[in-house]
Length: 73
Image (tube, rainbow, N blue to C red; front, side, top):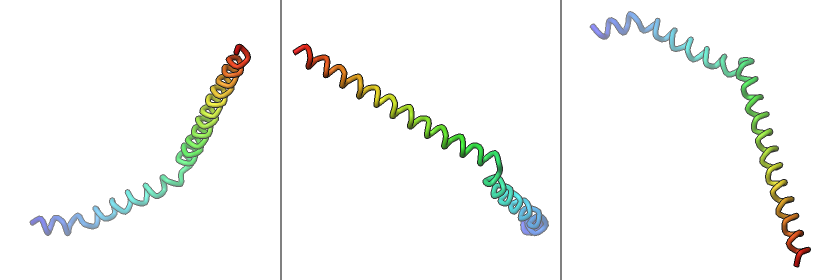
């Protein structure tokens, strides 16, 4: 009985599986995915810029603090 049911619906299942696989392949090259990838890249570059700026400000502040301490001595 299970064997007959499987034979009866095998073609429908294979078509459904092929459709699911092909639709996921098409989704990778869509415009939405491209825009999301671009936004992620821009966000990562902005994050890097902010981190470098904060570290630079900390280095400048530390340097000025050390110079002030050296002048007082």
